[in-house]
Amino acid sequence: MVEIVCSVVGLALIVLVLLDVFHTLMHPAGSGYMSPHVFALVWRVSRATGHRVAGAVGPTAVVTVILVWVALVGLAWGLIYYPHVPADFTYSDGIDPHSLPAFAEALYFSFVTLATVGFGDMVPSGSWIRWASPLQALMGFALLTAALTWFNQVYPPLLRRRALAQELSRLAEVDYARRIPELPVDPVCARLAAVTDKVEAVRIDFFQHSEGFYFREKSADLSLPRQLAHAVRLSELASEGSHTAVQLGSRQLAVALDRLASTLDQQFLHNEGSPSEVFASYLDEHHP
Image (cartoon, rainbow, N blue to C red; front, side, top):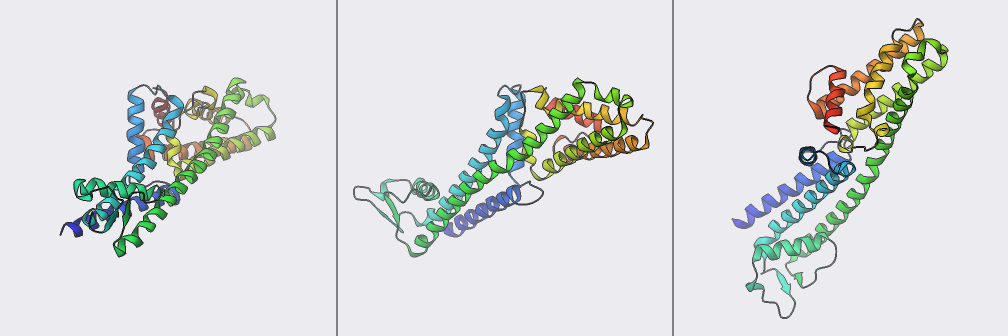
């Protein structure tokens, strides 16, 4: 009975982790079952301390999720091995297996195998365990690869977000929005279209790479939460222009900002307010 319960629980944990990895890293929605809760927990702890370690919140959350995956997989395989310790294992000379806690030994073997560093002083002798342990080692290698892939996926969206924030900051510094009536129509339309495209790209990034929300910026000109108000102002003042093309460009930017606010609100903030209120809440989350 113990063997059945441990095996079922262990297999369930393995499936849970694999599904979470799949939905977090490979699914277009970019959101797993466990990882969003881990991210939210790390974020709440950081926010409660005033975000003292500003730029490290996002990377810390990613590493925490990876460690949770590793811990759960190690625990899962430990539960599977537990009923077979020490009967189905061979120990090095000088080690009395009966003097050691069976579950601790199962966890030890599980994490050693998961780390793909070899078996050491405890080698499986049972037929099915000899086949299962290489599978676990392969899973450990896959988790390592997934972790490296995740970090490679995180930073391109951050670069796009910073690029948008920096452009909005530059436009605000020269009071571009107020000067629109003084400028030629074509360059203004091109600028509005460029900002709109970047806003849409950032919205898609938040949808596909939700972990990006938890990465904070120290520099004000790179912080999107600080700069989004300038995008709203740009859209509002451009809509007052006398040229139809400029008004159309401002409307497209307003729609893109509405979509970005909706994505931020539905996935993270749950504010249910206007775009300006959502962006204010976004700013408060990152810079309380």
